[in-house]
Length: 308
Image (cartoon, rainbow, N blue to C red; front, side, top):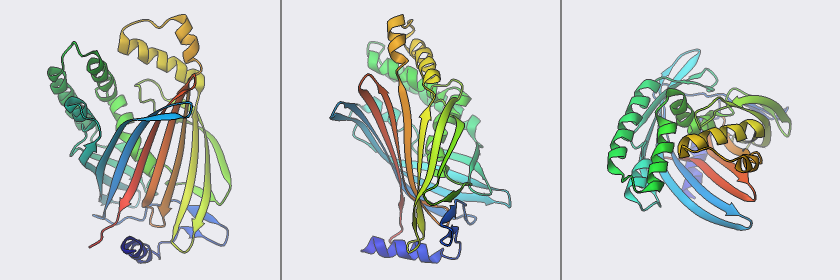
């Protein structure tokens, strides 16, 4: 009951900034944010291995995200994200360090006037910091531990080149601001093609995307938006082969390449967004499937309401 009352106060205090038009059932996602305004979120990343009807939780990470609007102009916002309080179910101490690599990390970026993401401003600083962290981790692992050596190689691929760091760093950011700048009509499906980040460090992938405004809550002043995204299968297979050969330092056989051609990648994103442009809750489910086995990543972002 207390949380419901706090949510009510949050909604009423920003009621005049309406983006919802109940007359024609439309919504435009715009960020109405004040200079020095702050919000706090809980983020949860969970990874599962699914085979048939069986699923196994591989890892789970919880952490806090603090957001601050540090600059506001007629054409843009400058925003600071800071991560903290990482908690994980992974017991291995070195793996925990790798998972918590962003502890107290600050990411500074710019959006357009609507709140749509534009660019990371401190990318060079982030890349240097990740390289320093990687150098420390390399000294701590034993070369006989093949699993950790492979993990460090993957970490190196994701965090040592500026393009890869940009793609990896913006994963949560893209989820958070995905719908900003768009105009939507209730139950109308928008279909399009776009380029999506390649977290393996190669060229962006082509993807087919479908977006729909599925719910308007006039009473509570928020909407629910749905996105479905399907990556080009041929491009995905080629990149998986390139990345696999780079990590293992071995050529992939013709038979295995044929199997990899069946690889599928999809994303289902659901976000509830308040009229001020602040997401209230967002869940992104990524499925990577091959031969009846699916790796599932669930990324949840939930606003933390101040109870004081």
